[in-house]
Image 1 (cartoon, rainbow, N blue to C red):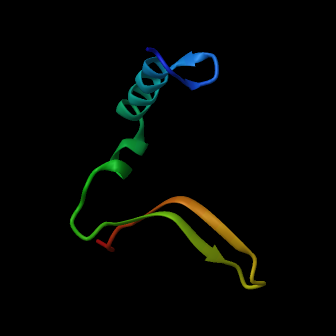
Image 2 (cartoon, rainbow, N blue to C red):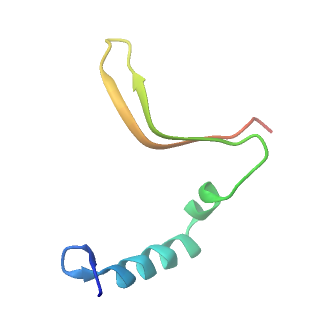
Image 3 (cartoon, one colour):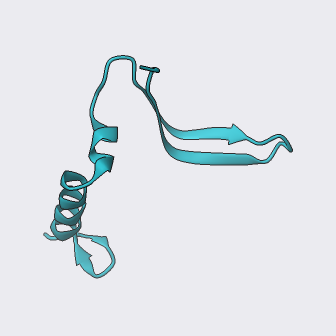
Length: 64
């Protein structure tokens, strides 16, 4: 059974596109493990007025 991950596109097609994008992008490094790296998903942050925002993926690397 071939599921549609995105309406109109088979799951394997979408996965292939995402993999190709990450292979040829500077973003790929953000998904590699590193010593001292902290990765948070769905991190909530607030501005000075108390408005809440949700960051899908937050990557924090130690300073070099």
